[in-house]
Length: 351
Image 1 (tube, rainbow, N blue to C red):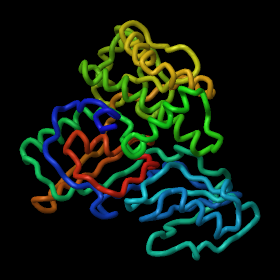
Image 2: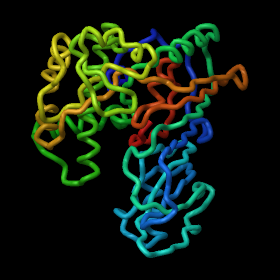
Image 3: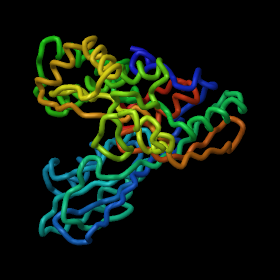
């Protein structure tokens, strides 16, 4: 499956040119931004770790081995790519036990901070991800690129799940469809979780693609369910909400369905659109319902906070920005340039 089949149309027109992403790990830097106070005492050792050439699960296994605890005793906030320079939080359950973890440090892993806390880290605990990205081998018209960057800064981008979610050439989608058609759930927990997430993501992307195609991905329509950037709650858009200033300020957004058990709460044309997409993926929807997932929502528009950019040289564009948890930097980059092929793709990464 191609990128356009997995995602959908771009919001701001064709890409402005071409560039390379991740020519080196330093070209893709991510920091988890945490805004909870850590107590300094408790059963859980929290570690802020810088890593490269390692994915999140590999680091978790190294920590479990060094601390001599089961793998399940290690937790983390989010998945991060192997082919990147990332700083992220882990916690290790160590009640009444002090351990020496310096043995895990190497050229690929550094412990930046260690402190105790009363609770383990949960998925999505961090408030956002901060990105510093260099696009190299840039071939794009500078004036057009500047206009596009200003559009993204002012209006955001469609909040597509990135191609990383779907495996190489969409293999995870094909695997999920295969299981859904037979109404089978993989016995391995990690495989089951990955395929259920894939199924939800492709349905969401189809809904978002339809809203991008009709130009309503960043506009509230009667019958939409509106939600705030950092909130899981939502409310029905009535006439008075359509002009809400928070929509213009990129804090309030229309949302799309993350499929599961329960009735769609949207109304009117929005309900019809979402139901039409669901009908086109009936086997996947039934499979998600039978797996016990509940109806949830995800924002259709992705605000790109604190976006800034510069050109270190004529063939390089450097971007800095923050994104909400669970959103993909590649969704931003896709609105700018076509990416030159890179062989090493880590299909499990969050961004």
